Amino acid sequence: MKKKLFYIKEKKILSGKIFKNRIISSPISINLSKNGYVTKENISFFSNLAKSGVAMVTIGAAGVSKQASDTLNGMIVGEKKYFKKLKKLSNSIKKNKALVSLQLFHVGAQGNPTHTKQKIIGPSKYYFKEINNHARALTKNEIYKIKNDFVNAIIQAYNSNFDFIELHLAHGYLLHEFISSHFNKRKDNYGGKFENRLRLINEILNEAYALNPALKGKIGFRISANDYVEKGLNIIRATKLVKHLEQFDPAYFVVTAGLYETAKFKYIDMKNGEYWNYAKKIKKITSIPVIAQGGITDLYTGNNLLKKKFGDFIGLAQSLIADPDLIKKTLSDKEDEIIPCIAHIKVGACHRCRYIKQKKQVFSCITPTSWKPGSRLLKKDEIKKDLKIWENLNKEIYKNKDTIRKT
Ligand SMILES: Cc1cc2nc3c(=O)[nH]c(=O)nc-3n(C[C@H](O)[C@H](O)[C@H](O)COP(=O)(O)O)c2cc1C
Ligand code: SF4
Image (cartoon, rainbow, N blue to C red; front, side, top):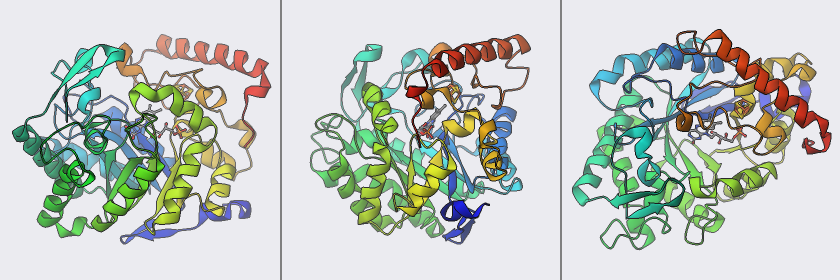
């Protein structure tokens, strides 16, 4: 790598795993599993990311059960039947010289019965205005079942050769909902004071570590530094959360923000680099590695963030979806050839990859450089249609160059 990118090229060892540089592909869920199983498309997409030159690929939110999933095509982890294909997925990434982390989640009250065909649950009753859906409160027995699902999924992820496991404690999903007083209004020992709201997470981690002590140092946490609601997480509460989670020997913290209902604030914050400031604040109070992410569009910005101690690693999602060759092009002085993500240029200009599940579309990005699913899923004329959308958006956006953030 070029000398100018000194901080990005630095190696780092975490829990005996060698990170060849400081670039991590952020979790991306692509909604291309079948009946919960890993598919050829999953393997193709994530191993393509591994080839991009990142030190670690993060597989996006895999449900710890069918109930945990946010769509019918989400990946599921935990039951014996999923093991073989999960191992195939982790090995395909390692073959391409990257480490791999698997993010685990339960969708909680943000689930959508239209996509999942199942009843929606949360720590407490919750009315989700955007989809006119009422989540009902979990019983204690249901909480115990979910705890077991998480434990099984963590153990299976480790046994299937994933280097790290990331617990999704953000974006308004179930574990985040337990932490946040915005969602958690329980009157039992899983609600109320901070220690109670953390009980489910504590129990999951203690049980997983008791079953396999080698997991220590291998679990990372994606946390929210701002929910943009009064009783939700903010940077002060996130700091308290980090201090609490330190007792579990985390591998890393990834700093993010927002709930479904506050998405528009989060995109503006992200565009303004606020996510990086949150990461910096977290890094100041912990010795655990921090991943700064959200709106990083090029390696020079990433290098600067590392230099100025905003994080120990940087995470990229959409820049690598739009152009998986971003790293190679940068390193061979061909930055001009990088095709950017349209959403990074203008907030709200493109949501194609994010909102596929709502429209029952197949995951794909509209740029010409992006990975495309096999022809079984996406026909040539559909790809052509995507490219036309890209061309038009591109023309429209570049008419007004002031909208491009200088990095
Ligand atoms: C298609 C898509 C899928 C995503 N899936 C997940 C996910 O499963 N879990 C998660 O925590 N974040 C997910 N994210 C958020 C990204 O990890 C990342 O935080 C966000 O896109 C901001 O980073 P970026 O500007 O580098 O894209 C997803 C984003 C996109 C675009
Ligand atoms: S589909 Fe749109 S938002 Fe998603 S990565 Fe591609 S250009 Fe960006």
